[in-house]
Length: 197
Image (cartoon, rainbow, N blue to C red; front, side, top):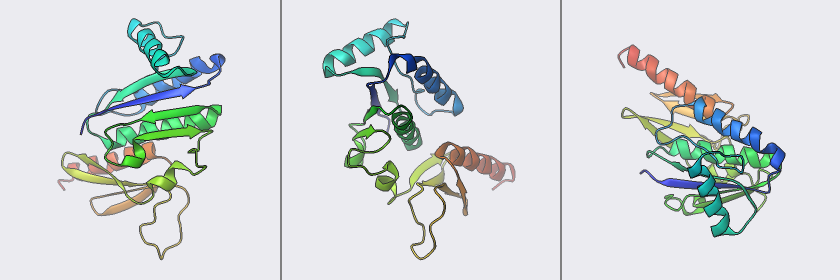
């Protein structure tokens, strides 16, 4: 289901805005997004839409918003998850508050997320919330399942290092990040199609 996810960064030092903007640009170029690419408006933004969006966000929320944006998804949960992890990482890197609002998320606990220094307000890691279910991405009718690092496929086996698991076409593998897991899964899928499977 296509939806709009709003995000905010609060309390970011002005000298870091240029780097945050380049991090958003880098994220946007790292993969093919099913919906729009992620972006953020800051006080450095020169575009009229970005300047007005930031002004309205600051006026509506009356808080110390340093960067604001939204992501229109094309129904791909992987897009949402990658943005969520990206915001969590920015929060940890800069020691700021990051907020993600996803009013139409089918999971109530993921409709509003706030990160402080990379952790949820409760002190838990995001992966602890995501550990119960895989994220499923369909590519040309073929499901690819992504498992967060805290997820255990078999409770009797020893825990693996903090890596993202992925499964498709009867194969299971691991990668250090979700972006790498997605990249590798898509390579495997292309190879299988090339072999006629």
